[in-house]
Image (cartoon, rainbow, N blue to C red; front, top):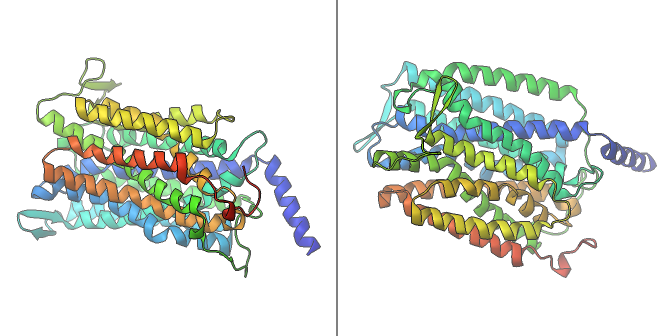
Length: 452
């Protein structure tokens, strides 16, 4: 017992002075952000390559790409927390990276099948859906599983990792700011690197083959490097072997409502990032060009990027800017930050619908930037040994990104327009505001220790 206590003390001391484990976990989280947004940004290109003959189901089928990605969160989020308790943080990260590699390999297979066997398809009414599209959906599910498993590690690890002079929400904002570098660069990567900046109507599925092969090699290198590095566990953040938790994690009201809040948050966050491009295409086809400083496209060197790509880039770029700024808010509580940002986001969403100006939706990215960190830190506050189990359940709520993206796509098909579908964003923002003001307060019977 003395040896175990000494080991725990030495581990805790190392965590306080070593920055390297924090940097390793943060970099892997960057990869999650990058590949998550790559998956979303492939929706519009795949609609033009795989779903040209999908008939009236085109928008609904397109949003299935995001749906299956986040289905991985729902089904396998708790799997990640079980692995953390059984094997520790490092081995769970490695398993998540293996899932990521398998998902990328499935993407590659989808591209090869779509290129070599374009006539193999499923027919439903007047709709024709190639087999390669269904293979891509499987890849999306595997990638979502990888992201879920890795996030089960990243969130409690970063929130509990004791860096001098920081608080949990601040550390989460730092890590998610790095994650946002990945989400911000992904739209440019898809448009300019994968598809070489050509018009979206002229892209071909075989253009995905070489980029996916290169990404698979890169993630393989990250896997083998991570195996060699030391990522220590953090004491009192997961149940020890054989330990039985006396309470249900759902008995903590502030946590249970936090799970609902993150469900709605990710729902609207992903819906905007994934569907704003599709709304932009609709406006352009109907003769309503979207301008940026008076121009309908932007030029980077010899690459023409349509406004539709710029919308997503700047939306996710708002996350990077907002998280970078909020990482300095060491004296502003998570509750205050969440209250202010949800109120402003509601106003922007309503304005965008009334004016049909998508730049107001883009601006919401700046406000969404700190919401994850705020909700997560409020939801797990004071949970102690329940933290890792809570993280797994919490990550499952990311499935909201699938639900609201798909619902919005279905509404767009039903209403014949994307315009009023953004009421979903308004509803989500108001429910998060309720959590900030009331649902995040900890009941006296839920206090495992004295918390602020």
